Amino acid sequence: MKFNLNLFEKILNNVDKPGRYIGGEFGETVKSKIDGEVSVAFCFPDTYEIGMSNLGMKILYGALNAEDFIRCERCFAPWIDMEAQLRENNLPLFTLESKTPLSEFDVVAFSMQYELCYTNVLNMLSLADIPLLAKDRDESYPLILGGGHCTYNSEPMADFFDIISIGEGEIVLPSLMGLYRQCRDEGVLKQEFLQRATKVDGMYVPSLYEVEYKDDGTLKSFTPKNGAPAKITKAIVENLDEAYYPSNPIVPYLSTIHDRIMLEVFRGCIRGCRFCQAGMVYRPYREKSADKLNLLAVDCVKNTGYNEISLLSLSISDYSELPKLTDEMLKWTDEKKINISLPSMRVDSFYKDLMEKVMSVRQSGITFAPEAGSQRLRDVINKNISEEDILKACDVAFAGGKDAIKLYFINGLPTETDEDIVAIPQLAKKIVDHYFASPYRQKGKSISVTVSVSCFVPKPFTPFQWFGQNNIEELIRKQKLLSTSIESKRISHKWHEAKVSRLEAIFSRGNRRLSEVLVEAHRRGMRFDSWDEFYDYSKWIQIFDDCGVAMSFYAEREIPFDELLPWDHIDCGVSKEFLIKEAKKSIEGTVTPDCRTQCSGCGANKLGGVRRCCL
Image (cartoon, rainbow, N blue to C red; front, side, top):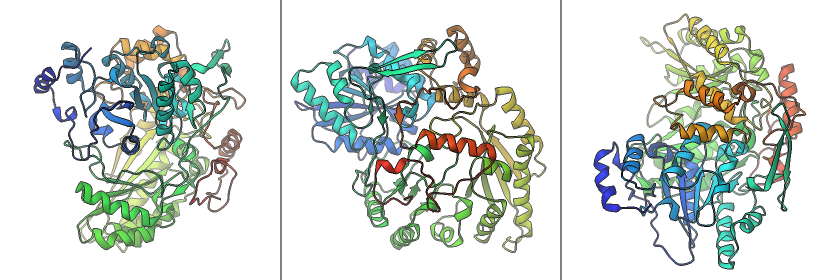
């Protein structure tokens, strides 16, 4: 299919939010096509508004375009109305910058941040007239590359990709593109290039591994061939101060999920929450210096005009230079009326001075994440906070004039009982009572506490990867139990749909046998599964049944420690032995100290990195 620009301009009148598809934003990189270049279509398998809020996409888009020989352009999943127009008018999926069809690029790269976007990846390939399965694509098709958070277990999507990038891509993706150019200049065919690509840090080539299963559906063996490594170690950026960071990011025409500057403060986590995949796979802990961050913030404000800066990290209060950073930034942000916002904070390190500093321009809500209502369950998940810590943190919030508290929890955690569920509204009620007894309460004001509860999803490379998810009926029962246990009108309850979490769990722990399920789901029109208006759990049940695949096998099954896992060929830095030890400690209710208090020997420091705080 060829792209008809005149026809494209006409169909924009027939779609909602045409700004999703036109490009031309301030800060966009537009390069002329040159001989010898490597062209990359960077695809985000969700809408423009979500993709343009993703920091990883902004970093990699800029890092690739910073290379003279690489031309990188963006593409997002078209909304249903635009998809209909493309198919009706026989137009291929295209990039925003030059309106070039994806099939004309050398490389089509997908960022996979969420399991429920997998069907969008297949739909975008279909719209680009590119065969879904890697084995069906010859030399005439682009190289299909996958990356992003979901690649730590990419097996459900392995059959669709030529290469999967594991870890951080700012340095290794330009290196891979350089290898691609070299092989093309030498006349090397695709198969030889793929074998050479395994020598680049973090590059996993699924076709170079033979997978065998036992009669019970578990893995029997995972065998490399043609010189592929037995283990693929994730790539990391050792020095964040020296790594590429977009100081002149694209400013979207449309309102996006995050209309602000996103300033990444550090990577990794010194904590060890046993349910948290990000806290494990982003190790080792590496910080950017406060001086570097302040300079980046100045440039970003100057180049975008945004009036809010969000400091991003897994636990912002763990940043060792946070007081220095906020002091330096407030020297100029106060004057320019620019707000500094923080993500949810750990209650054990929440303090008044910081709150007063960062909220001096605009008031905002306070969010904490206890994750569990009872102390017993907080010890199981290694949260390392007490009820006293939580109430002290609320005291600080009350002293700062805050009367709205949001609390994040998870239901369905391993070893959870009904008593643990009921403890959630009981904790919220204690916060309400604490407010009315507080000397900081403002006269005539009340308090609102929002309890936001998600469902536990067992994730690869966590101590809880071996534990099964509760079945749907049990998750729903627990949600109802929580709701009926709320006795105060000052407490509100929000929850995540259990049927969505089930599919997430299936693909989180899935293997290559799920590729058949995904192909069938695509054939039946499944896409935008992360959107409430399109997710249809009953259709997914039928698809799994028709494919002869048991959903419970992946979501609910308790996995023995000695079973070969679909992701055992990936080395994220944290050792399997450490994860097993943490899983056993969770059953005992034994906590593990954070990395600054004591090194627990997780293994991630072998990957290197400077400005580490977990030695």
